[in-house]
Amino acid sequence: MALYGNGIKEPSSSKEITRAYFDSLLLEMRLMDAKVPVTDFELYGRKFKTPIMTAALSHIGTFNPDMPSGMVQYAQAAQMAGAVHWIGMGSDEEFEAVMATGADTIRIVKPYAEEEKIFSMIKCAEKNGALAVGMDIDHMFGMEGDRDICMGETMEVKSSEDLKRYIETTSLPFIIKGVLSVQDAIKCAQIGAKGIVVSHHGGRLSYAVPPLYVLPEIVKAVGDKMPVFVDCGICSGMDAYKALALGATAVSVGTHLIPYIRQGGQQAVAERIEEMTAQLKGAMAYTGVASVKEFDSTVLHRI
Ligand SMILES: Cc1cc2nc3c(=O)[nH]c(=O)nc-3n(C[C@H](O)[C@H](O)[C@H](O)COP(=O)(O)O)c2cc1C
Image (tube, rainbow, N blue to C red):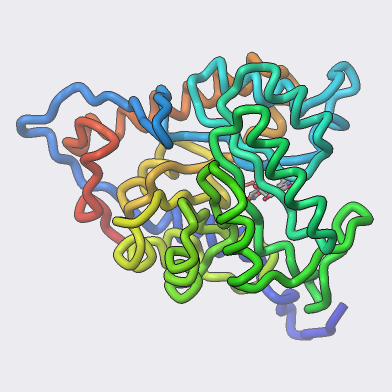
């Protein structure tokens, strides 16, 4: 660990910076002619009750010894709440168990060095009726700039050409996760991605710009071409509101839901997504937003 002296801490946590940015955004009220809002949401031709989705998590089976697999409960929770479900790294067997719950699921495949593995995981997603498939490009590198090794598996640095081949191999919408610049967003659109996740993956880069800070510029650049999702640090309906007001198509919640799955299983997670959706609906009512298509960034003020 570096010695900074004078009480100065190590390079700062992107999670804290992201949290502070959420909290610096405040809402004005727009009650004149406001209506009771609806949070219904449509994605890739399927209908959902909320634009608040689960995040692409992995390895959550170990958190509660009573659970055969936390991943299955997490999927059931999303389905109970009428939310889109995302899943990250894991075997085809685990993915199939998740799909057997009936949850509408987006599968994020890691940037594995082994190309065959990527193609066969994409095929497995197709065969099992996934809503979409994608890749988290923010796991190509480890924290020290070499190829990442994640849970013992070696990753590879993927070029636009590589990603284009994955996009072209599948009939499913392909989403690129880990976009945190207009430059990358434009490249994703150019190679035919059908969605991006604006994210720093919970702080893989120190001093990462908060996703909500770059979101408006990204939406301006590519928002008319594909859905723009956001994650990182969302833990209330108010956080979700702010992301949606700044142009996100929908938001994902990961870390915040883990204690709920640990303590109360799928029921608790489903209830938490419903509570967050109710809070979102409350904020929509007070700001004159009648549906998820009507968000307006001018409601927000930064202090
Ligand atoms: C336990 C855990 C496992 C994760 N596994 C994956 C994964 O396999 N693939 C992926 O794309 N993201 C993975 N993520 C990252 C999340 O999808 C998300 O980008 C990140 O946690 C930020 O959102 P959050 O602050 O709501 O957790 C994981 C996060 C956690 C906490």
